[in-house]
Image (cartoon, rainbow, N blue to C red):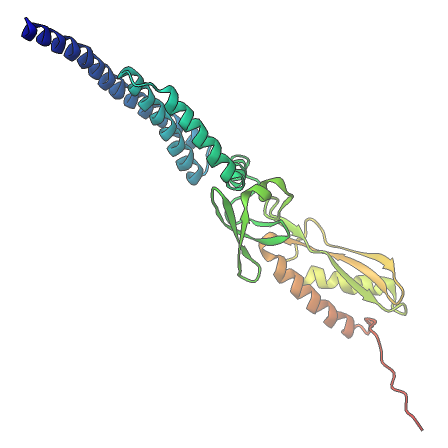
Length: 269
């Protein structure tokens, strides 16, 4: 009789746990199939939205891990394991990690915003957080620029996404803002003609929009002219330096003086 009872008990337990194991295996199989479909659908949606590759990979990995954790909890529940404590532990761990990584999470959120709204792209010349440079890399937590003196600049995405950003490449053209001062003895019309000739003679200065030369102010020791040529963004510094040099040469050739402080030597008897 005892043997029959034990055999009956073993059969009951085997049946019960066998069904649980079968159910857990079925959940694992179906769950993995659903996760793969969800990941594939999410990847297509992200590609359709043209999200950055690095952002796509990060978000897909994050989604995959979250879904797998939920799947494991479902399997444990099917096997009869109490999952409430596991959920509490995961929640506590998530809170602790979130508090410890507040700055990093802010940078991550900033990176997501930058990659979604795309205020700039790789190769753009931007000015942000007091730095100016060409965008080299856009990563999840930081953005790397190459400065004008070929130095690498790394800016956290949190402050970058929350601050002002000037993108010089958006419109494709830039205005070069220059100021030249001449003597009060110089004829204004002649000076404007000399300055305009410098601009129109330069091959990289655009004809549309037209360059302009105007009297900016009557300063203490000079008449200042606002000289405003337009050029393609990539030609900015070439035009800037060339116009500076050519203007000095042209003013000298025309006999127009550029005021500067003079030191008068006093001879002692």
